[in-house]
Image (cartoon, rainbow, N blue to C red; front, side, top):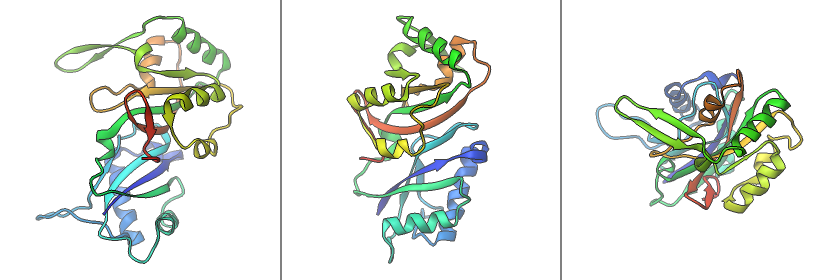
Length: 242
């Protein structure tokens, strides 16, 4: 049995790296009594995979974890959410528990885009970044690896950018199917000093908000929150929807 969990990672847990986060969930599921499936062999481990590891220092309200289960036992999905969260620390909380078809592909292979809120702490800085983004027909970022350099045009790979959450949400609704009501629980539509972005993502091309600010070069500090992860290429569907 396959299940997909959406969870939030907030507060001080932003400083926990991916491997520590994996160990956290392994222990959390054991404490919760969740009927996890284990790999075979000399050193069996819980079968789980994350859609996309979150960088250290970032918070999120839209993380996804795929797990394999032997069964749900005597509890429903919503009851398991309560059981797991009662044993968590309040900063990592499961917000959705979805049983998936057996032939469902791993969320990491479906990832096509991710949405973000970047807090810049200054309304003037937000306006400058927005003008910079839309004032250039192309914004080339040079991604360097050990073997090569690759040019990425951020104007093409960031389909939506806005300093106004309502505008961002309206634009998202045109090309995305996502849980808008869930997002509004965490986002104040009237807050100032933030940039909202939809970035293409995946194993081949993974655009991060930091790339834009590295090129812009005038921002000394910001706080990034990932809002959601979506599958697709031009039309996107939230991992929490399908």
